[in-house]
Image (cartoon, rainbow, N blue to C red):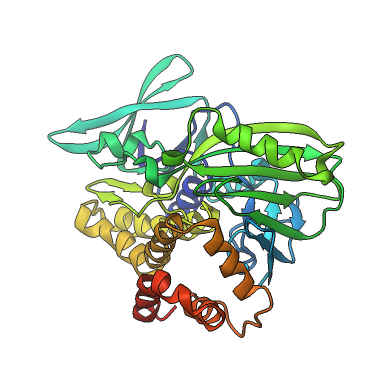
Length: 399
C-alpha cells in the first residue's frame, strides 16, 4: 500500500486535511480505528457561523439548531447576554456531530481520498531515521501503509505525535475532564446557548446547555483535571440538572465522557509529518471548543501538503509553511485565551460576579479583549490589577 499521504483519524481535522490535499492532486488515504466515522460523538457540538463563508460542508442536515447568541451566568446567576455576532466560536450552530463528521469525510472521498475504517495505527514505519508511513491493524490483519507524509489527526491523546518524538503529554492544569447528556423533554429552551460559571458549579470550567431542538439539548460539564477527582464531573453535572426545574421530567438519550486539551499549542511539524486538530492542541483554552480551529488548520495543512507532494519536498523546513500560517492566525488567539484561562483560575466567585455585573448592561460596539477589559474596569476599577497582564497582551495583539 503506497500513498502520498496517510491521515490517521477521520474527524473534522483529518477529513479536511485529506480533502484539500486530494484536491491538490495528492493520493490520500484516511484510516479510522472505529467502525463508523463520527461515532461515538465526543463533543458539545457547537460551531461558529463562520463555517457559512468557508464552503467546507454542503447541505443543512448536519444542523440541529441555529443559535441567536449566548447567555453567560455568573455564580450568583447574573446573566450576560451576547448576540450571535459577538458570542464566539461555540454559538453559531449546534450540530449533529456524527452527521457533520460523515459529511466532511464524504467530501474528502469525493475529492479523491480513500477511507478505511476498522484500521488502528500501531506505529510509524521508519527507515534510516525517516518516517515512511504507518503500521496498522485492519480488523485483525497487520498491514503497512507507506506514505511520504503522515498526518496525525488522532485526537487529544495523539500517539502519532509521541511516536514522532513530539511531547504531547498534557499537565492536569491543561486538561478538561468532560461529560455530557443529550436530554429530551426539557422545558423552556430557546435559540440561545447557555454557560454557567462558578467553583461550586464547575471548578476551572463551566456547565453548558446547547439546544438541539424544541425540547432536546446537550447538557454538559467540563472541569479542570487538576481540580477534579474520579467521578466528580458527573456528580456536579447531575447536581446542576437536579437543581434546574427545566429538567424535572427530562430523560437522557445519550451520555458521553472524554478529555479536552486547554493547553498552549505544541510543535506540529517534523520531517514527513504534520499534526492537526486536538493532537496539535488547536483548541480554545477558555471554551474547550476546537471545531472551528481544526477546520481552519486542516485547510492550511492540506494545501501545504499538496504543494509538498507536487514538488516532492517533505522536509520539516518545507512543511513548516503550515506551522507558520497557523501561528499567524490560530496560535495568537489560543495563546491569548490561554492567558485568560490562567487569570480566571486565580479568580474567586466574587470576582466573576463583579465581572458579570460590569457586563450585563454594557452596549458593545465591538467584541474584543480590549473592549471587554474597558467595560469591566469602567464599572469596577478594582479589577484593573487582576486584569493588567491581559490588558498588556490585548494592546500588543490589538485585540
